[in-house]
Length: 376
View (cartoon, helix red, strand yellow):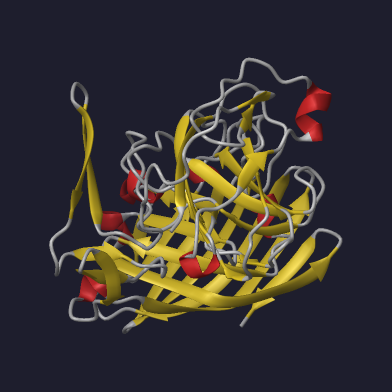
């Protein structure tokens, strides 16, 4: 058994972790599990109305060590009215110890806030979680105001505590459900189950799965669109300068079909070890220039005079060179989101070109003084 609790975030921000959550207000839950093992905590479902960030800290809500953090979780749909709402929920699976106090923080991405649904499933799913109010010292120091407690037990938002609720009032599965969320401006959003055999998104950012018995199961390798490609990064260098980060990357992947970014554009993603999205940028198809018989594709970002900003979320240069079925990739980018990547012990890099998706999920990073190098 587990518990699902409805709450509301509003007011000012006092905490932050991954996912650029520094501008969003948060709600904190104090939890002391009765059993040890792997817990599952998520904000998935149509009762969550914004892009959430979810993290767990140990011992102290404001200064305790971070146990786990997630921004976007594949297959974790929310009703936030955006095209990417199918993954804007958050899911973490912390390994917890009985009798140790943990703090579950429901936060938001880049100022997002509102109603959320939090589901906590303890190890062994042996009983409802014991959640108690946690009034964080950081919020008290900042004197946050204007918060309203939802029906979430133990939540504090904007400095006010939420009202109690029956933990057994709702039971939602913490597993990756095969759900489709459709929204109408007048009728709101509706969640429907996908039939068995439907494609679904797995934890692999490039892999499609297959729905079976309401859950997203094994990877679908029968279609080219569902087959992830291995991206082999030969160079990934990161440098953090103040509130900005810079990356220089080189890699190669094998494409079973011809690629043409002048038709598809390119999306670049950098993900943390917990699969939270650190950085995402898209280069429109019209901004690529082809040469050498459609085998070399170049993009050069236009810098805004005086501001130092570029289009395409900080991508300065990108080159894709095709030789047979091999595609070489070179990239240079500067963006605030990349500052977080410098401090990660590992990264996942993803390239999307239409139905083609290549990723390197085994990058190990090391460095110091704001400089990191990542490799296999």
